[in-house]
Image (cartoon, rainbow, N blue to C red; front, top):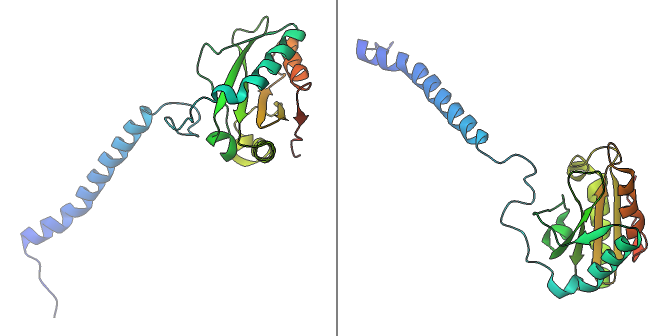
Length: 190
């Protein structure tokens, strides 16, 4: 036996799809509005998850970096703006010190990151992890295709510098050359 619907029940059933479409439209609009207010740029690591500065743990390596830059005719200073490169898990969790480098004829400075670890073995492991991170998957897409990476291990610290020759002042290469005089290099996997 078939069930007969009253006119009110028919109206309620007919309104359900329209109500669902209206609710979905409102939800999509709210989501889109929320996306429009989100900050642009990398979202990893999330804001507010930055480890504390490295303090004295990176002082010797920082002095070596500034000395090597000075020998190359470049000035390394404390950063005048916040900077954090894309990082693999080990680097993201480590305390760091940033050195700002001004390159003639470039409007924005370059940055060298120095990470502190508990031991030389941890620094080497972290540097190898970062080399893999920037050569594959999500880390690789954070940089232009022609990016050159310098990852060095000096004692219980690791040094990271990335630059893209396309459109750069040729003297930006001098930062890479200067850093190559410190510690031991880490190969970037092909």
